[in-house]
Length: 253
Image 1 (cartoon, rainbow, N blue to C red):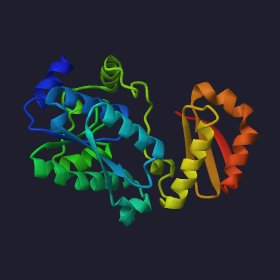
Image 2: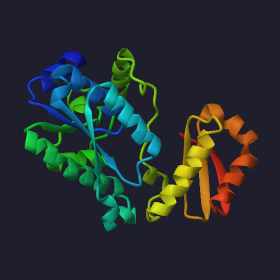
Image 3: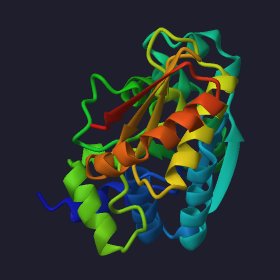
Image 4: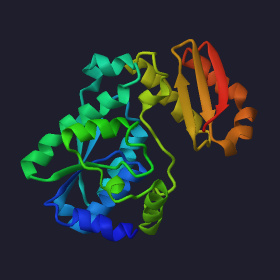
């Protein structure tokens, strides 16, 4: 499959594109491709800004959009006013995408452009909350439509020397809270502070899983486990500073 030509054929006749952007590798590749095919004046990027978006992720998204010469609209989405989202009962991601697409659609409609997002062909469309929300709102997923897998996406990112070409999946801060435990702004602030503090000690992959103030599980990339074990007392002190009663160290996978 000649994915590049198929992606070009899919997008080239669009009047313009509004790209739901996160700063991750999938949406960065989609945004780059849209700019190459349509021109930056026919592309708008939009990002959902809420307590679940880490500040570092927003900064990176701004940098990438700026490097491509694309306007980035920062949308104050309303999922934190939605009890279904906050309940975290297993469909949180669906309500998040609903809020994003609902806030993004007016920009596509007023321009007569296509609203799209960066799901790839390696994602299971039946399980992905974005797919369910996108299907109901006629939001396009060009990478998946032309069969681009995660491997192909990263190949394209490397070919364009995108800074996110090797970036691991970076889901929102709310994903650190296990299903069944309600999402709160206070918990997300704790999580972000923990992850910033640990990354400042040189760790690349960090996830702070928040089980309420009862417990936090710090997940570290496989290559950094020994270093984490050596600094375990220091990491424990960080957890206690945030008010956690129990601390656990684990491997991120």
